[in-house]
Structures are given as C-alpha cells and as structure tokens.
Image 1 (tube, rainbow, N blue to C red):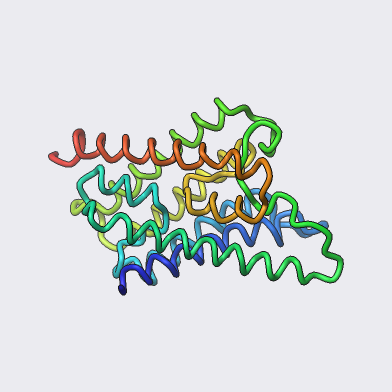
Image 2 (cartoon, one colour; image 1 turned 180 degrees about the vertical axis):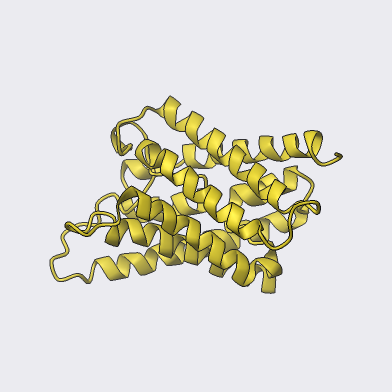
Length: 228
C-alpha cells in the first residue's frame, strides 16, 4: 500500500504541477511562463517526487513507465494493475482540483482545452495524427531509455531524478507544439475527462503511442545494454 500511495501522490503532483502551470501560468498576460516554463514545471514535478517518494515505489507516476520497466525486466507484471490504477486515480483527482480552482475564478467562462493532448485541429500548432503518433512513440521510448540508463547499477548514484526530470523537460520543449506533450497516459486521461469532446475521442493515441514506445525501449535496453 505504501508503494501505491507513493504512486498516487507522485502522479497527483505531476498533473497538478505540470498541467496547472499550463492552465494558470503559461499564457498569463505579459508575465506568462510560456512553453519553456511549462516544460520546466513538468520536469520539476518528476524530479521532486522522485526524491520524495521514489525510494518507496520506484517513482513511475506514469502507466507507460511502469509497462516499459516491466518490458525491461525491472518490474513485476503482478504489480502493474495496482500501479496503473493508483496513477490514474492520482491524475484524475489532480485534474479535479485544477477544475475546482479554475471554475472559481471571478471571470470564469470555460475551461477550454484544459491542458489536454490532441492532434489535428486540437494540436497546438496543427500537427497531424501521424506526426503525433511518431512524436509520442519516440519521445516516450527515449524517456524510458533515460530512466533505465540513469537507474542502472553502474550509473552514478543519486543523480537519476535529475536526469529523468531534465529528460522530461527536454521532451516537453520538443513536443508541446505538436501534441501538448503526453508521454503519459494517466496525464492525458485526467485532462481529457474534464475537457471532453474531441479530446476524449483522441485519447486512444495517448495510450497506444506512449505504451508502445515504452515497451520497445524496455526491450531494447534489456537486449542491448543490460548485459554489458
């Protein structure tokens, strides 16, 4: 249960901090933090929670990461359902908290896209389904390679959260204009549930592409790097 609570709180913080920065601060008149600030916020959520609770649960905070670690031989299949459910609950409750905050603003009218992920007309810069699929697949694959490499027994001790947090920051710097950056099915699900409409119908891609990328990366790491 300690591991599941750690995954719950870690994923809650990721969505609340990362998506919250996009909803409240990215476009704030004249003083907005912009794409760079949002990218940094997502990286900081993972970095801080990896140090806070990573030693308890491994600090996945992402169904794709859990599945990628399983494919890489670093996580037992029997633990996958509990982890993924805890991550989804944490993400959805964080989105609920964000919804409660934004709807209580004095001039509130609509939640808009609510930091959701999308392609085509829902892409921040109009990228197609194919572009979104490629980006989410590749970026999640490299994210898993960063995680698996930085947590390897031969890697420098204590620095993995920094590498992982900066890796996620870089991923967002690359792909916010493409899909608003997912690489995390729980993060995508939580926002789409509140944004509704086409965001919900496009949600499948933000499960399929990240999970496929993560599993391929786990298998590659296990085959190419694990037995050096």
